[in-house]
Length: 148
Image (cartoon, rainbow, N blue to C red; front, side):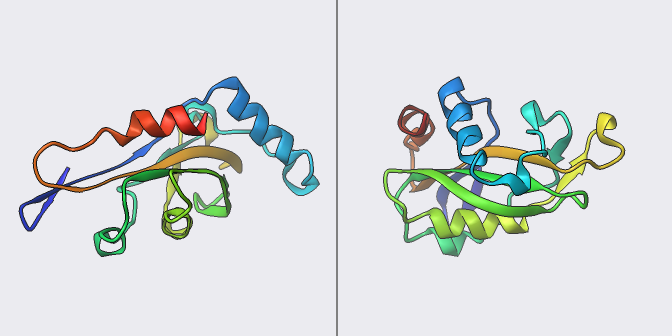
């Protein structure tokens, strides 16, 4: 949590394993794009792990309602995000641009089993819980129910 002007901001990235149906959906979409078929998925952050905090300016978010965006992208050999794409949004698509812009600025570092810095695909949820004073609504559960 971060504290700005006595308002509690709950903002987090959720790196998670999705249900088989969601993974199969993403893999099925990849079938249409032969350019990335040979790149495996970064399951459980086994090849790349997040490097530092997720780069979003809070003033970009203060006009939005809580929600989430399920994204997929490629982590290239430099640990940078390439080709981010929105898979699903909840409750609306208003956070899509913010999530895509933030994903492009995000960096990853290789794990010990990825010393050759192999490019990998990744799927994650950008979750924004909103500006609240006092109790913060748990948007994460609602998001997972609606995007899986």
